[in-house]
Image 1 (cartoon, rainbow, N blue to C red):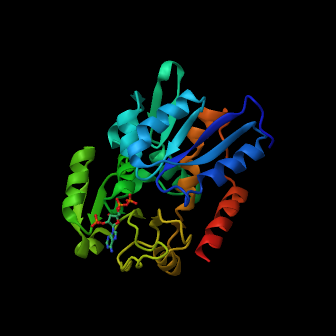
Image 2 (spheres, rainbow, N blue to C red):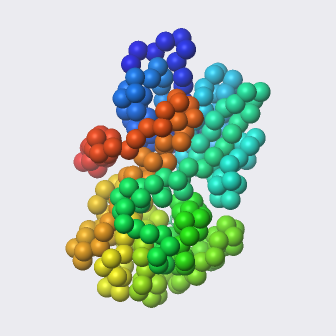
Image 3 (tube, rainbow, N blue to C red):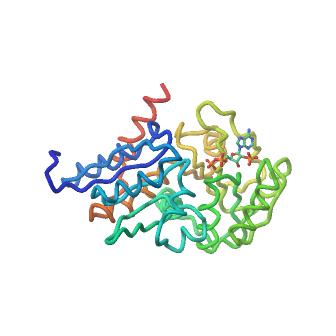
Length: 285
Ligand code: ATR
């Protein structure tokens, strides 16, 4: 797409940002919809974050995505926030309004739920407990999203138990916390198991969890998407559980920002998944 003098501009702020798939993803949508716009990587050091965001707004950008390590900084900088961002304390999408207004939202919970809806259409969130592994940054939005979806019981486990207790407290969600080494006790009668830890990611050790006590009807979701089929998902497939990989969360969380900046609610299609997945496979060598 050739750019004009009235092109709409957005990008992703991160440090580093070279690993981000968002430019490829948004670029695909821009091309697909024939939009006069661009979405670029914006490597910004933490110290320069506020100045960079204000500069982008002043330079006419529509807004930006925010990734690691800036989501809390974006939260602090936003002049208005949506409810989900306020509850998670993190912002991943900025929309620049009139008069210097910086609207912050958090679409990670939306991405998580939409990925499960698309990948496991038979899953009813209200039907049974959800087991969440990990209490880091990625767990925040997921816990709030599960509570909002009406999950009857959230069971949370983390290697560092104190962080799980603290997170539940911070978010104000109701969850039962399990010790990491006894977390298999959380599996019987679960309807959903979600890995939010970095275990299983390329270069990390696999998640060492025995699924024997998990009902075979439970959906297993890994938010790790590199590789697409983590050892956890491979183990779940082998025993017949429905599985949902993590790529869709990345793709769906991007939709609200694209819509706000470029005026189209884009679709997550098999073609898009293949396009982004091909890049992941290349990177994994
Ligand atoms: P993210 O923002 O992606 O969630 P993070 O905040 O660094 O990243 O959190 C990483 C998660 O993976 C944490 O839950 C972490 O457990 P701790 O809180 O105990 O650190 C978990 N994790 C990372 N390496 C792990 C390992 N070797 N064993 C168990 N859990 C691990």
